[in-house]
Image (tube, rainbow, N blue to C red; front, side):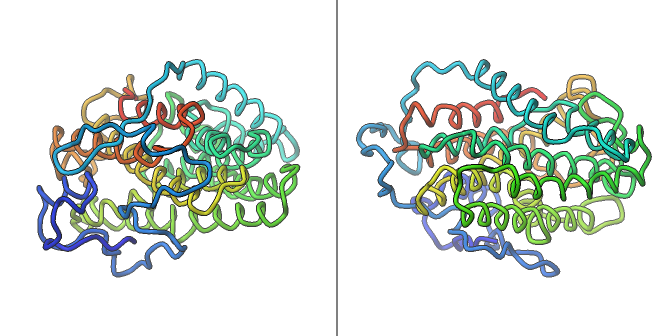
Length: 378
């Protein structure tokens, strides 16, 4: 994980999110990885270190930055041209759903394919595939070249939800307003269908991606495998299972953030990086999108924790209050509702700061997506 600044560093040199957490939770530096897991092992710049704005596709800073400032640092303001985010999302969700349906037809054995398709086509926000497509477009790429990877990302996401709901994991019988996969098909079928979805995801990237250099396809496969594996999503789930439940280890903010940067933000990061690579991004652009996606992914989890204690099961389409009932640690439990909302607002701003200097029209979907994540109601 990223090494954060010690308590002797001034607020002026910190990010907004770091400042917030430092102010309310001073003491040991954050983001030290748990002793029983290695940190993410890919070459990332620090989550909170600024990345210079010198890429060739960036517009001059003066075109996008306001003179206004927040309390601790100047805040870039992104041009807010009218953008119909609802229509954009409906169009992209429809395109992704069509790609998913075509990528995974019903074959023998029928039961396992029906189980795979049940969770894959059950609906949802399609955040990961949309981030992939939007990142590709942002850097000047052709979205059709990123669609196989976008579909693959949703396959992996569906697998993670199927396994997450199992009785041996989070034990939830409701997903997206419908019975969870294991309730419909049985636990053994759900486990096997999840394995099959992972294999199908990588097969789809390798065989369906057209017009892209093999080296870029290999990089996407490598990034995706690393970020969802034992040092990414799986690592976050391992810590989640060992910490915070009844009879389990009590955790603090440092461990909670480790869980969600790995369990949730890693998937969003893989999506942004895949789209950027396939779109022909520079290394600097890829790093900016890494930071954007990590902020956005952590924001998603903070908001999810808030909704879990403020909304009903009917409103959420999944079991509300489950984490509290299980004694698990959440952001509202550690920070309270209001400070969790403040943290969410600062993460939103930090994510959007990474898009300053890109073409504002091409950046509009990713700017609006962060607003959507921050202000969603389920």
